[in-house]
Image (tube, rainbow, N blue to C red; front, side, top):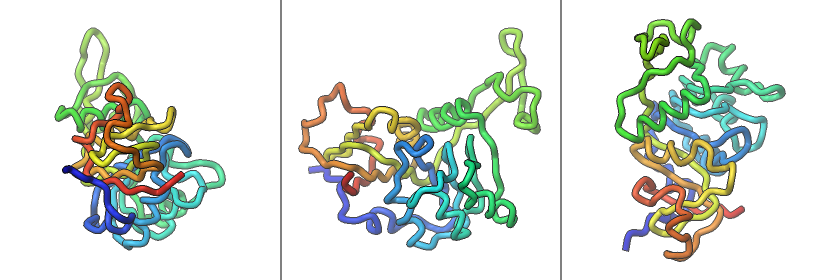
Length: 222
């Protein structure tokens, strides 16, 4: 039987190397893999590329700890700075991190395109701003649009409410956010899950991410 459950966070992350590109789920404080991120910190890997909507919310276990520990060399995000959460800003001010701002809808679509095997897409978002500098532009349907490349990651770190041993996932409401598209766009998808349920307990209509996109599941509790 296919069984994607691993015994611990450290086992799930054992092959994450220096220089890895990590897709990290979450929107604000919802759906963030707050147990996997400290596991990355414990591994001590460096020169990571982090792709996430936010870069820390000032909470224990969020992405701020990786910037505080000087483990990140590049970041792509829509909302990198939050008042009262200075770990990313401090690392940026020290010259440790290159930052690429990506509009939120564009970020989601670039990741979705990566998971769908599409090379990229044209969008009017960002035309005429510094976000379009150096990128191909084209007029489509009378509007100038900019080409955005698909995003793919080496690893996706995501949080789910429920999983079975095959890796089928169910998310809790708004905690779904970026997690499903990130699961599709990574070479290896690692999921921290609150509850492991028996096979068949998640109705097929309620499977938000099929197990085909999941490589490892680790149970962390609520």
